[in-house]
Amino acid sequence: MLSYDNSMPVKGQDAAPPGASNRASSSAAAAVAGRAPKHHHIWLVTGPAGCGKTTVAEYLAGALDVPYIEGDSFHTEANVEKMRSGVPLTDADRWDWLTALRDESMRRLNLGSEGVVVTCSALKRKYRDVIRVAAYYDRDILVHFIFLSASPEVLLERVSQRKGHYMGANMVKSQFDILEPPARDERDVFSIDVSRSIDDVKRDALATASDIMQADL
Image (tube, rainbow, N blue to C red):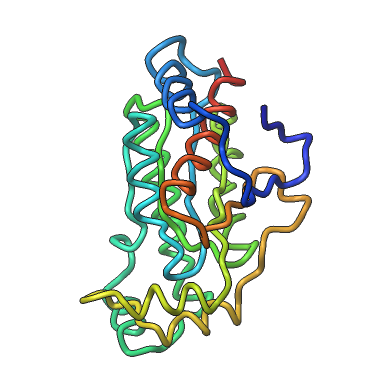
């Protein structure tokens, strides 16, 4: 079982034991459909362009039966145009976006959801800290980050295969230029290697969430 007393766990290349995926799904369902957790949970699926945030987040939200918030949809048109043109966003460009994601997450929780899953690149520690403020506003909230990690080469290949997305391959380098990988003292962050199959990544993400949800019952 995962614990905040542990250093940031990293999901590696080891194969899952037989039935691990089914147990994770059952665990998540029990956490949501059974006794209510002691806290409300915000799950941030994070990482650079091409890491699979949307795919993993949609799967996780469905498995946990909680609302899903697509972070890209909260960018201003000015931000989208900058990224479409290959211009990296500045810190100033991101503050209102991060605040909007935090506020929307809290709004969903206030409507009665036990949790919410959000996609957000959260490339710098101070960006992650903006979301962490939610727990200071409401002590019933726990914030968790699932950091999807891979080499620039892997992500560049994936982004180059996208069709019709404003985040072009030229943005991968700019994101890695400012990326601050989670530090060991960021105990609310769990890293998953996404150079493997998407099914492996989904399984690990759900197992991480399920362990924490079960511990909170």
